[in-house]
Image 1 (cartoon, rainbow, N blue to C red):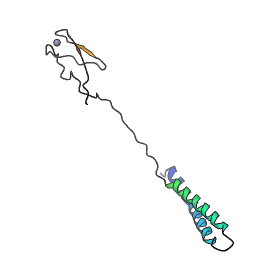
Image 2: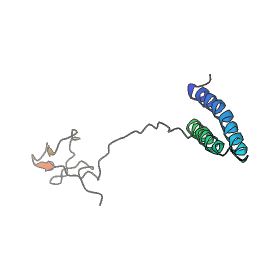
Image 3: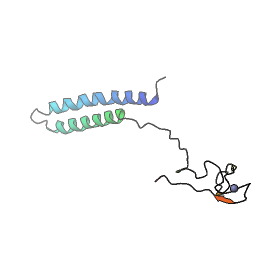
Image 4: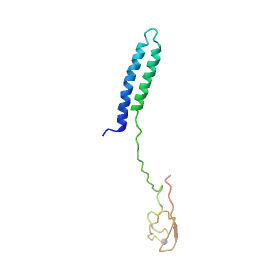
Length: 117
Ligand SMILES: [Zn+2]
C-alpha cells in the first residue's frame, strides 16, 4: 500500500517540475532586449518550484518510543537484609518503607539509600 505522504510527494514533484522548467525558460527569454521583466517572473517561479521540492522532500521527523524505568540511584544499605545489631535475617522492605523492625532483637533499622557520587 502506498502511503498518503508518498502520493503527496509525487504530486508536489509533478507540480514543481514544469514550474521549474517554465521559470528557467523565462530566465533564458529575459536576455532578449525589452523582455527584462521576464527575469523577475522566471526567478519567482523557479524559487516557488524549489520551495515546493524542498517541502516535498524534506526529511520527516520519526516518532520514537522512549521507555523510562526507575531504579534506585544508589545501593540500598540493607541489601544483605541482616540486622546490623544481631545479624538476624530481616524481612524484605515494602516499597517506600523507611524503617524495618528486627523481629529478633526488636531494634528499628533505618533504610538509607547510598548515593552514587
Ligand atoms: Zn536484630
